[in-house]
Amino acid sequence: MVTCPVCDGAIDVDEEDVDEGDTISCDECGADLKVVGTGPLELESAEDLEEEEDEESYLEEDEEEDEDEEEDDWK
Picture 1 (cartoon, rainbow, N blue to C red):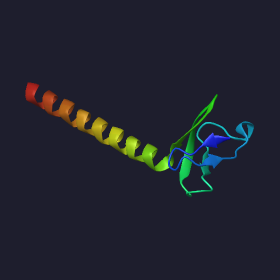
Picture 2: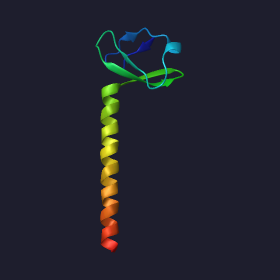
Picture 3: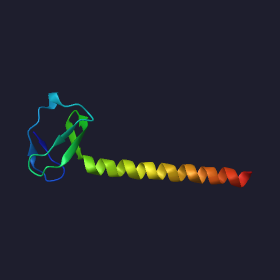
């Protein structure tokens, strides 16, 4: 058993049947959860992970633009 990070409900999942990166759903709240670790089993909200990835992607694009502007300043 593992606990849903969204609603704290118990999720009955066989830890041997899931791999890191798999997505499962909480039976109580319906949240999509991503397996982020398997020893011990760790779950995170798939929505939260997508938001984090979007923020990281946005920050990386900003850094690249800043670097391009700095290079242009030197020319």
